[in-house]
Length: 372
Image (tube, rainbow, N blue to C red; front, side, top):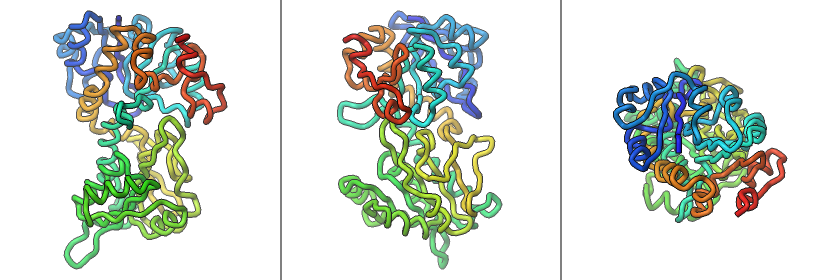
């Protein structure tokens, strides 16, 4: 199979779909790889590094999309890229379709085979291709939040860990999954007072087992969220419903009750965000203020630490990339029910139920769409 990797064009997105060692594995398995020139510069990998691994370098993204049987990316295809997709071409990347009707419409009209990293499941549960980016984003959320709390950045002028004689900041984390756990680890390491909120008692127990009495836990109810948000210096939004739009746990009215200069970091913004006041921002212009509350809602947070993120992502995507290339997508999806969950759009049909429900499309089960 001919696999193509374009250079990412989203604002300040430096990650790349394949690293040289992944290219080497694909070439060793009998496949061809073409890379857009300078695609790996953002992670410190030159065209020469990719050529040494067996890839061919091409000059334009047009050539990548025209020639490739399968396009490997990191972020969702931008409008110009979506125009280049063709019927039957495989697209393997993050998509986050539920809050993005324009992208979904374009992918449906392209009749391409669109497989989303974020809905591929694991044999023991979870979302293995989303997990490493959730780890990165969870850790980064505390870095970003700490910076936004500085007075020069619009915040309250609060140091997360405080100092002797001055109390630490109150950090509230909505969701005790991978994002929340990694955020808690970083916040606790900096000395903050951390509360994790979740609707699962088992998740809360796991937090106590991992962090002991250093972390406070609270079962999620509207009243609990309202009270905690009002008293917080920093609120991290890390809730996720696989494939679906994120629930709006924090209303605009709750934001109005927050302290002036408090900060929210909405890690769920890729799926629409879990604050009613959230809207996607970029690394170029990462924050805005609503009711004196600083909002950090960058939709590709891990892109800021592109090298770490790209290597972590390739660690988990490579086996699936090899399966798709070696078996063809129909056989690979038929053989692996977890990879099959990743198929979101096929031949003009929406094959992911939460996406179909969120955007008003007819849901076509994957096996029916594939004729399996």
